[in-house]
Amino acid sequence: MPGYPEGAPHEQGTLDAGEGHRVAWWVSGNPAGTPAVVLHGGPGGRSTPAWRRYLDPARYRIVQVDQRNCGHSTPSAAGDVVDLSTNTTPHLLADVERLREHLGVERWVVLGASWGSTLGLAYAQRHPDRVRALVLFAVATTTRREVEWITRDVGRVFPREWEAFRDAVPPAERDGDLAAAYARLLHDPDPDVRERAAAAWCAWEDVHVSLAPGDRPNPRYADPAFRLAFARLVTHYFAAAGFLADLAPGGDLVAGADRLAGTPGVLVHGRLDVSSPLDVAWNLHRAWPGSELVVVEDAGHGGDAFLAPVTAATDRFAALG
Image (cartoon, rainbow, N blue to C red; front, side):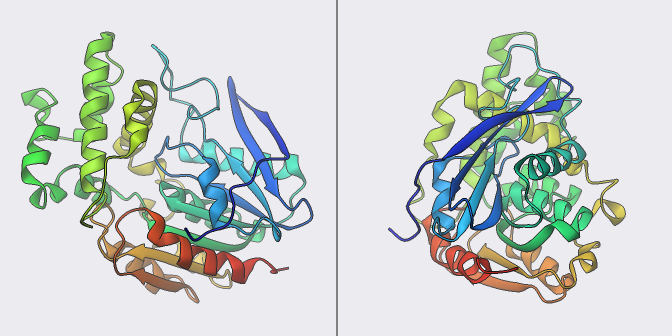
């Protein structure tokens, strides 16, 4: 299998992010290497050892972080009652900056996928002087239009599965904002209501990630605690279009891509990605001066087909000053 060894962290901890949050982080690879920060997907997907396969441990100081309320960060969004009001994109960007300062990093390479690409773009546009380069794959920018595509329009490709997804919310809410409807159900006082909503949301997530033959269900959704935390965080962010309104013109990171002029970037995207269609990456590439777009013909929204093109990009940036 391509990619670098996962290795093990040589440094880890939790960072007090304020407002009751503790954010978990790990450092692996070469302590004297080029710093790189890994921004996982979801929101709520957590950072796993598999992310280290994209970065050469001999040349990178690899920093991983679990975003607020997920993975090893606390409090968990899987709790019976959880307040997500202090979990927004500006909060996550502040956490990344807080971690950079805590670890004594001046500038780093940003690696992100799916929601992590949205977060990486927002971070780079807000803190361009802290970013050496970006490598983003399974690109998403979490616009209102993209959320509408995932929750409604892609049902044209998977009509039977989408009807089951839609019908898991009450009839009066089926023609409205499905992410907001699910978000409400996922915080219902009745744990059975929460669990049914989490299972339905995650079943739909598994459906629309790819058109590639042979795709298998993601085993992470077998964990009830993960299902609930993930579904709560995704719907929280989707219902607010990524909380991007105050971070980019019109809440659209593509419109702010000119801020990245002079920042090297590689976008890697699957031709068969129906979760985030290729035009998302294409439009960003056209708006971002100097960016590169690599299309992986047999890939959807994830999987090992990304390892070779993503590691090729990170290898190029390993020696950046």
